[in-house]
Length: 288
Image 1: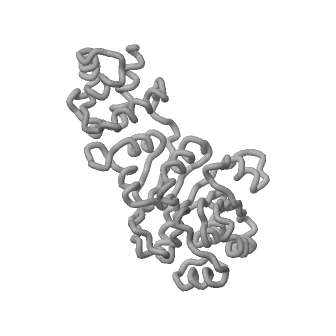
Image 2: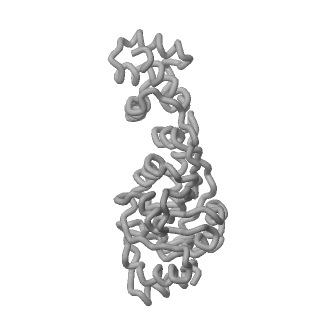
């Protein structure tokens, strides 16, 4: 059993097992084999690597991931898929199935336990993420998964554009900088809404995330993140006004400090790069 990858297979399974896609969990099944193959190419697990699959659904990718890797742990929140997924898992001795909310578990602990390992292995992630929990899952992976080597994620196109945007663009903002702080992000492809059943209201995109071996060095990470949030909450403000509101300093002093590190006080937050914000946060920390 290779997983349900076509519209006819998905409809047949829905009728046979009497289940319906649940909107609250963003269940839209990929029914385009060409896209499935491209996602597998983007993921490219090595034969010695483990894979975490989030939201396997009806297993369109699960079997192929198991065939290409050391092992795959498929984490699914909906136990209604148990008959289909269990049958698929039985055909692959290196595949494991866990019914749980991925936001509520310790991912690395569960992966280690699933394969009876003595330490956390390097692993990749492959996921079709529901639109309403994209950011929580993304930052759980980036902040809590120290052994993750890469993640191939299918997310809402608009969110993908925000994550991969560069300084000066309309979609560039807090999500762009924060993701860039933790990882290098590549835009892989756009996936039409017509490739899913039921058809969602928006198109999707596949991105590939490669965690940085060394993050940019900030002296006070909490202050750095708080500064980013404050700056982009009112993105039409100049960086001078944002910093004057954030730091307990006179406007003239803030302006002087911005000029000292080569940042135009009249620039807006969306014009500043990750490196600019790191330099800014570090300078104000150093100068008290």
